[in-house]
Length: 128
Figure 1: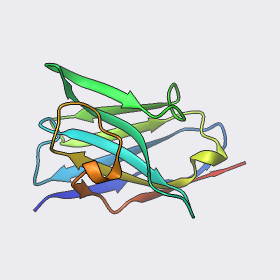
Figure 2: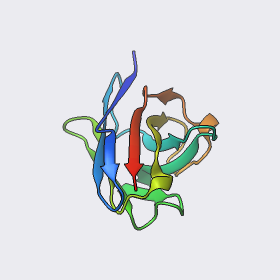
Figure 3: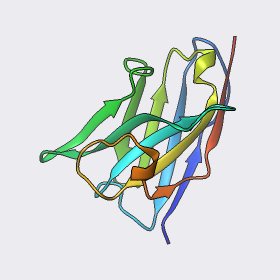
Figure 4: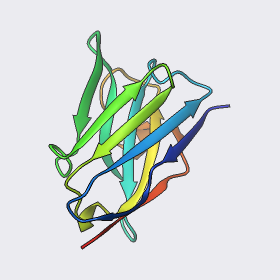
């Protein structure tokens, strides 16, 4: 059974950094596109970042405009883990962050419905 488990959430001061981990089982993260999404209280779940194989290259990445230049997604195939490094955090980054897998394409997709498997989420709270 496919399972995704996120780690690393918590309370962070504005301007600080955090790193989220997504440990996968039941699938190989190298084989599929992996995404990070987030959902703030009272808002819809939104795309954050994607990593996967694109046009024959490994570790291609795409980011939402709101996090571009601040967040970095990466993958460790040996541990079957996807990471999200978050720098220069601000209060608008406060949300539950979810790891997800898109088995359907070899290019970045941003819709929630494009992803089949989801983790339980980890809360990131940024204080001013």
